[in-house]
Image 1 (tube, rainbow, N blue to C red):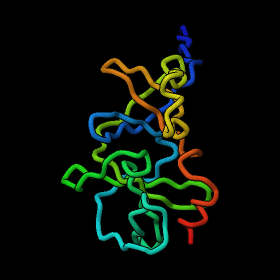
Image 2: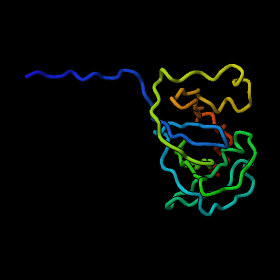
Image 3: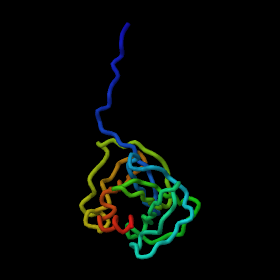
Image 4: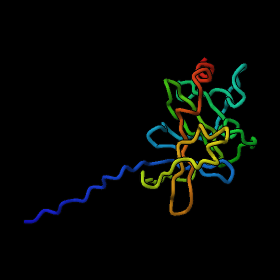
Length: 159
């Protein structure tokens, strides 16, 4: 009786949720995502940063909802049937990121992740970006949730 030794892929592979803001594709590691929901009734709250849409009751837990377009300095867009909220848990806060659409889940090898190109690193929103993933059907900008909010902003969001 012979045993087949299974080839183990030692290459680090991450799973990312692919979402869109306009024509641009972004990804966030699936391990950071709690769930993806349809936008529902968001309650506006005063004196929060302009990119915060408000809060949402998520099965008894209050989640701050941010408009990722506004956070990245892009023009706002009216919600439509494709709009989704990607719910993440970050630094003891439940945060929903409103995006234009969520398209798929992809596996991405660390060999296919490059640093942010130098010319992009000079942009104001580059601190939110972790790298660029190379997929068979194009490039994917990877979000860095650790940089998406400053400590002061997190305190404001948490209330």
